[in-house]
Structures are given as structure tokens and as C-alpha cells.
Image 1 (spheres, helix red, strand yellow):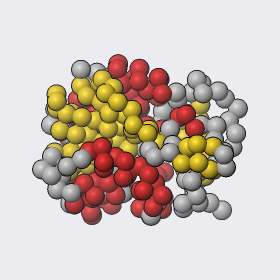
Image 2 (tube, one colour):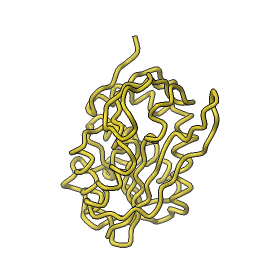
Image 3 (spheres, one colour):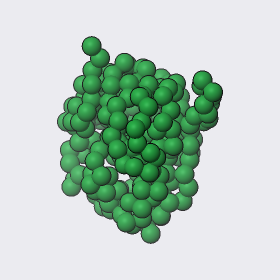
Image 4 (spheres, helix red, strand yellow):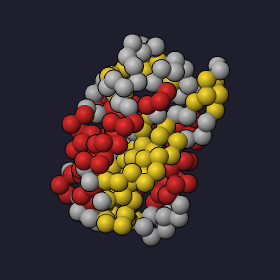
Length: 225
């Protein structure tokens, strides 16, 4: 039986699978790294770092990287890669207005609405005035796509404008997860309320599968008001 993940606290159970997701790496991670550009010497924060795959890549690129995750096990795995002194054990330990860039990857689609608002405010607080935040998650526009290169999901009984939860199965790793669907404009409103300005919306590379054109992820580029 495949592992099922329905709560944020359960993600450590699939940490090995997360580190081996090559299709996600080729789609999301490569897009984000291109957006970040030259990170040499830049002070960056990975908010919701998971096992530290992206944080480690950024460190190899010369970034002065720091990281945070709600999961103690994920923080340990990330610390093993980038150095435990670079991983914050709590949100309150993250210095405010300290980072040139903050990334938050595939987090907002697995937490409740109040947590989305809280995370958005936290990112605003720790970002420098001229800094940039890149917040990415699964593309809400493909909520009714039954199969992508990455996932399988049942046909939704909801429409695009409705916030709702749904199950999907990851092709890599074979585990099932619950995700939260919200329309793009809902996120835009939350970011605005948190003191952020949407500079751009970037989508990962488009491909076609079974007659559907698909872009798996969206990445918001933001700055402080």
C-alpha cells in the first residue's frame, strides 16, 4: 500500500522520495534556479526547505543560504547538507529584513488558508526592502487534469473558483498527498494583504500529454510594498 500524506507534519515520511524526484527537479527546480540567476554571495532563505535539495543547490552556486522548515526531521536532513548552523529551528529566530531573496517552494498548496496568510506575512517580514521573493506551488489552472508527467488525480467535483482539497498520487515515489486548490487570484489577494507586490507570474515549461497542454507549476515573483 502506498504512503498517504494528509497533514503538513507527515511529509518527513517521504523525505527519501522527495530527494529522488527527478521530474520535479527538471521542471520546478530548474525554472526557479533560472529565475534566481547568479546567486554568488547573495543572502537567501529557503522557507519550507524540506530535505534541503534546493538549499544545497543554491549553496553550491555560492549563495549565503539559510533555511527553515516546520519539521524537525526535515531541518536535520537539510542541515546535514548545508550545515546545521544555517538552519533556523523556529520562525522567531529568523532575522527580519535580512534576506535579499526568499524562496518558498511547494508549501502553500499543502497548508490551510490561515497558514498561507501567516507564511506570506513572515516572508514579508524577513525580506529586505529591495529583495525578491519567489513563491511557487502546483499550477491551479490544471486542477482538472487527470494525469500529468508528475501526478495522477481524480476528476474534481468542484470548479476552478472554489477552494477545495483533493487527493493526488505522485508518479515518482508512488505516494498519495492531499493538496489545497485555490484560484490564482485568491493567492494574489493574500500576497497583497501581506504587504507584497506581485511583479510577475512564471510557469514551468509547457508540454502536451494525452491531448492536454500542461504547465505543472506556477512561481510568483514578489517584492515588498
